Structure formats: structure tokens, C-alpha cells
Length: 524
Figure 1 (cartoon, rainbow, N blue to C red):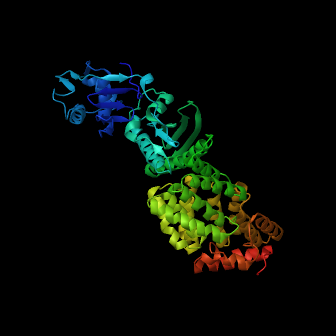
Figure 2: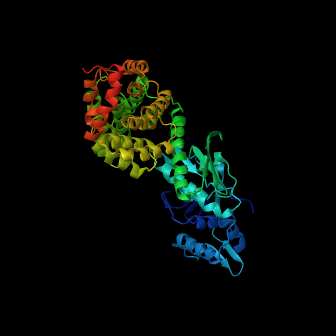
Figure 3: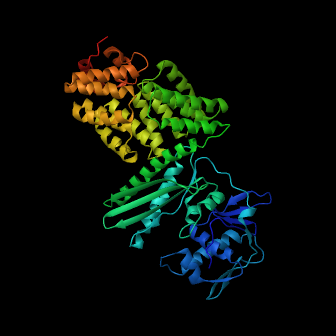
């Protein structure tokens, strides 16, 4: 039997069956999804592809349950489910005829829509389908792990801001079929396909994933992870979280690069998010804010634009690039209030509020905001890192390392996480360890003033005064304003010493500030 392409469309009895699933269409052409399981969909696809032909039970089960031994009653159950779904208003009996001891036949008229007859489905900017990952292991019983990776990736990607992800049930219709990514993109209306495989050998597990452009069929990105299988559940969480984070970054960069002559608000938001992926500097902060301001000017009611602009303003204060901390904080406060009023469940708005509260030194109040983000997206590495910062500043030092290390596993090489771990080591008087982490952060974000300031303190504590003085001078050159001019100004910044809890301030007094004094920072 010729394999049925998942891009094929079949019309029968007021129903439409396509690569997304089964839909009931009313007289106005409005389609409503019919919720049936993936096995039932697979059986229906086989039947409608050959209307009038008798298909044996063995033939149907071999296709619907590949490489799996199941009892005959499983097919009977799926046929019953199909009849309940498609025979409800049919007066002439069932669409599916049973031929005793032989099989089934689809007896209703079926129209097959050719690709040339279809209207192209619009493709949302950040749109993707996660195809079922292939199990390459010798033991085919390991398919459950590949299925778990597919399901978790579908869920995790759907949690990313602005992402449109095809449902798992629809994606399952592509299992064990040869497919063409261009046809998938045309039928499902997605710009990208994520495909992958899982292979297990002994205690080792290899997971590969690749991103494909459905317009050009080009391979855009790939990841390979090799891990030990000591804890399969934890391994599955780590792999899916790591891929989802990396893929989210890649997709934002790709979409932002699709230049348009007349950008709309979502285009400017994507460009601002892409600018966020660049190392922080005075110029990249200005670029981010300009993009989000353009988006808001085009769509003043956009909660997404309000949230991203508020977050960018809060970060400009936190990163010591604001010409006026008070002005940026006030504008961010207004935008966050508007965004949360319009979209109270938005993780972007809650993240922006958390960053604003940190910029104000209100760390304890920021903690619930980041916890809300993580409740929506458990793999939000940036929220995890910010939560680690809040724990550190409120004195919960024992909770910092697990959070930061988890964030680092999800987002390897993130310079902010390096900085967070360095900050903790410095407060613990472990200047050598702090310097190692800070040097890594400096290589990644060479224009971030706070990294140089922390290095000045660490080198001062170590006794390397010349290097401490050089780093202090670099921090002052990069910084906008006088925050780094004296110990008094350091203590006065709400988002730093002044906002810390008493235990953390005590550690600042005996480590961080001591190192800055040795680097040459005056008291006043």
C-alpha cells in the first residue's frame, strides 16, 4: 500500500482529515476539532486513503501499532471510537463497514484534495512542529523514552513567549512515515520542523535534534547530547530543558533576521529580543529599548511590548547603563502595571516586574514573581538565575548554588550565571574561585561594568592591587553616572548593598567593600 502523506487532505460526510487531525465543518465552513486519540486517527487515515477497499485487521494493526504486539480488541476499541465520532448524525449506518473475520471497509464517499487546490496556510513567526523522535536503540522497548522527549519538548516549547507549537497528537501522525518538510510547512502552517533521535547503549544515552526550515528544507541548527542513564526522569528533564532553551534562542535570532520593508509591532519585538541575545553594553541596551519603543508606538495596547520594554528599562538600571535610574524605574513601573492589568498570566510581564523590583532593591518581593514565571515555564533559565540573585541578596545563601547550577545546565555559558556564582564566592571570601568565574563572565560580556567592579574587589582581596585598580578604572569608564565613584555611592544604590538583607550586608562589609577599598575606591 502506498504510504499516506501527512500533507494529504480528505473530505467526507462534513469532516476534514488532514495532517493536524480530524475536523467537523459546519455550513459556514467553520471547523471544529474532533478529539480522538492518535491510534484512532491512524486507523482512520488508512481507511479513508482507500475508500471502498477491504483492509484486513492484520494490515491495519501493523500500521497503527508498528513493532508492537497488541491484542485484537485494541483495534475494535479504536473502530468503536471512530464510529462514535463520525456516525453521530448519519442515517444510513456507519461509514465503517465490518466484514466478519476479515476486516473493515470505509464506505462513505471521500474527496482527496490535491496540493495544487489548497490555499497556503499562513505561518506564524515562531511556529514549529516537533516530530516524533526516532528510537535507534537495539532494544525497541526504549521507544517510551523517545516519546517522552517528544512530548516534553512540545510542552516546553509551547511555554516560550510567542511560540506556536503544533499539538503532539497531530505530530504523531508523522511517525514511521517518510516526509517532506516543505509539505509539512505548507499543510501545518509552520516555519520550522524539529526532528531527532534517541539511542541507548548500556548506561549511555545519546539524543540528537535538528531544526529544519520548511521553506528551504535547510538544516539550521543541531544539538547532540551524550549522558549517562542513572536517572532517566532527571535525564529527560535536563535534555528537554537544554534543547528548549537553546532552540528558543536560535528561533528568535532566525526570525529577527527575516527583514521586512514595513515592520509591524511583532517584528520590532522580535528584533528587540534578538538584541537581548547580544552581550550587554551601552549600545545594545539602546538598541533593545529602541526596538520595543517602536513596537509600542505601533501597538500602544500590546502587553507584550509593554512587558519587554519595562524589562529592558529595568535591566538598564541593573546593568548600570541608565542615565537616570529614577526615570527608567518610573517608566518601567507604569508599563508593568499596564501589562499585568491586560495580561495577568503573562510570564514576560511577571519577569519584568521581578526585574523592576530587583532594580529597586525589593528582593523579597521579587521572589514570587520569578516563582510565577518558573511555575509557567520550569526551564526559564533567566528567571532561575534572577531568583538565585534574590536568594543571595536576602541571605538564603545555601539556596543559591543549586539554583545557579540548574540554570547553568539549562543555559551553558550564560555569563550572568557565572557572575552569580562569582558573587557568592566573593561573599564567602573565596577570591580565587570568584576570579575564575568572573574572568569567564568578562570574556562573554566585556562591556558590563559590574563584572569589572566585582573583579576589582576580588583582586583587591587577593592583594593584586595593580589589577584591582585597573578593573576599577574600567568599571568607571563603562558606567553611566557616579554609582561607582565611592563606597558611599555603592551603599546607596537600592538594587545592591542598600536592598540586601542584614546578613548579606554584613558579608558585603567584610568582603566586597574591603576589596574595593584596597582597589582604591574612596569612602565619599
